[in-house]
Image 1 (cartoon, rainbow, N blue to C red):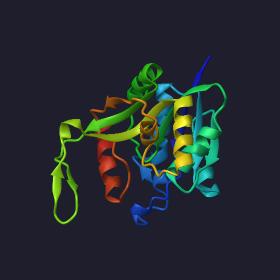
Image 2: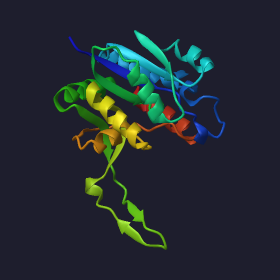
Image 3: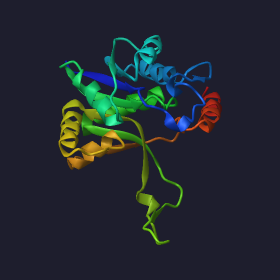
Length: 225
C-alpha cells in the first residue's frame, strides 16, 4: 500500500526578519513556536504517514525535534530552498507515493485543507493551495512603461504544494540539470508541462516574512481559534 509523506521546511535564513527574532520558525506565536502550528495541523489532519523535517543547523534541529510529528526524519537543508527540498526527497522511504511540501513559516494552514489537498493529488498528481489576486497588478517594463495584467487569471501561490512523488522528483532533477533557480515547487513541475490543480483558500494563510507579520499572524490565530 502506498503512503504519503510531508516535507516540513524550516531551514530558511529569515534575513528579512531584520534580527527581530533569532529564528522565525521558532519565534513564539500564540503560546507556541511558529513551527508547532504547522506540525499540529498536519497531525490533526491524519494525512501523512511519514514526515521529513528540514532544519538549518544542529541547534535548530534540537529545538524542532521537540515539536516534530512522528515518525519524522530530520534532514539538514541546503543553501537554497530547492536544495532543501531535494535533500528531503532523497531521503523519502521507497513506498511513498505522494508528497506534501510545506513552508513552516505559514502557520495558518488548516487540517481540512490538508485533507482536501490529499484527495485532489490522488486524482490530479499535482495541486497547490492558492488564492485569487484581488489587487490590480502591473508589469513594469522600464522607463516608466507599465502593462496591466488580467487579474482574473492571476493566483498567488501558497503552501502546501502536493505532488505525486515520481512527478516532483523528476521535475526537480530536470531543474537541477538546467541549473534553474525556482521560487516554489510548482515552478519545477510547470517546466515539465504537467498540469497543476489549484485549491482556492478562502482563509488567510500569510507567510511570516517581516517583523510586522508576527502581530498580524497573532491576530489571525486569535480569530481562527
